[in-house]
Image 1 (cartoon, rainbow, N blue to C red):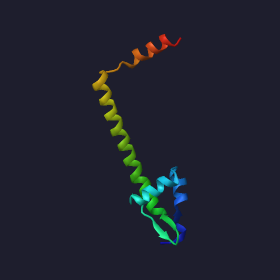
Image 2: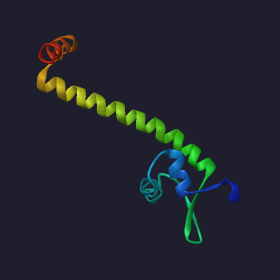
Image 3: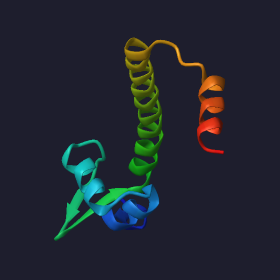
Image 4: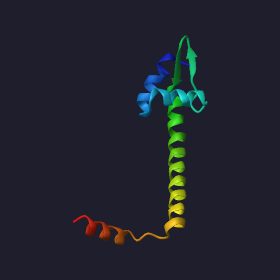
Length: 95
């Protein structure tokens, strides 16, 4: 593995828009492959790109599933919601 293709965890965090702690959790959880050289951890650029591709799809799928679950829970508690009616009610109560 070339050192030019290696990124520090701080660089990975910046690239992903995540905290350093979150990137460390990805590494610890073996979601993101990394290697330790001396006292520092590094991630191969190709591994990061693969992680971004699979992680993005997984996050979107998780978000959709959570939204569907929440929607069904709300429907079970209050039934169908008429959004137009809610907007009109809000406008009447907040002139």
